[in-house]
Length: 90
Image 1 (cartoon, helix red, strand yellow):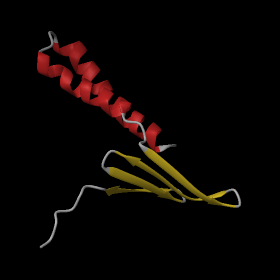
Image 2 (cartoon, rainbow, N blue to C red; image 1 turned 30 degrees about the vertical axis):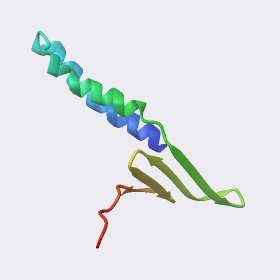
Image 3 (cartoon, rainbow, N blue to C red; image 1 turned 135 degrees about the vertical axis):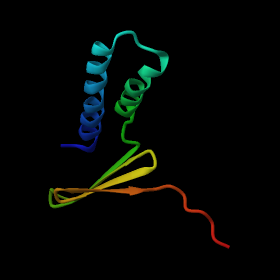
Image 4 (cartoon, helix red, strand yellow; image 1 turned 90 degrees about the vertical axis):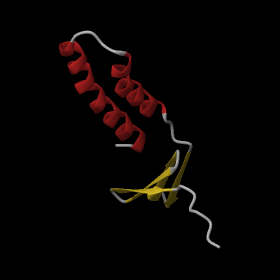
């Protein structure tokens, strides 16, 4: 499963409880829509950069940068690393 598919799956998981609660709870308020908006925003995040390193047709390393996060797959395991700028030292 690709990192994008995982993000979409996670976003959809967030939509289901919200949809059920909205159907049962009655009239919606303006703030009730925020979880749904957040889920759609998450779905809209596309990989800004992707690099696949291979040798003789075998994938050695797969990396995807999304926003301030870098996802690296080494074999079957994905690792998330934050790319936020570190504060300058004096």
